[in-house]
Length: 158
Image (cartoon, rainbow, N blue to C red; front, side, top):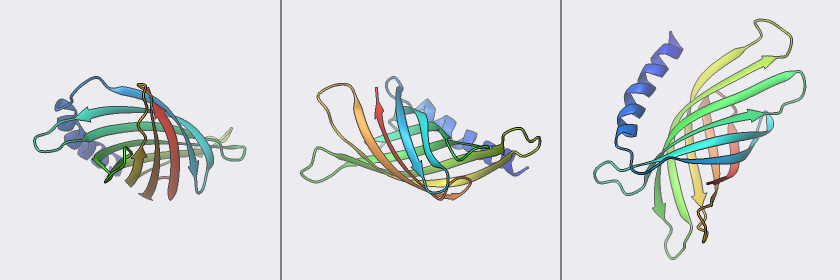
């Protein structure tokens, strides 16, 4: 029941935001370091949104597969809204935001060992300008419930 409620809230908040999308989505790759689950590799999809009165709002969806010690398996799916703004006298952009997190852990070879949890993210990030279409970023993501307690991510958007 709890997962259905969270899914319904996500659909009713993220779908209207996606309808206000501007421009094509961007895809990127990332490496994440988590407090509890070691390192992980992931993909990110970003869509710029342009609702009235907001300069830089983005829908960011990412999936990270972490590599904890064997025989454990762990992954996270995050859907966040991030609001970007410029730092004074700096080409570096900053963003803050939050969203939903779904984490799933299991033990290899053991039936019914899977546990899924849903939580909330808070995100703080920096975007670094380049002369090309590539856009590197770093992000700190405290998670309230759901997955790891703290994730540091570095990646590049294409």
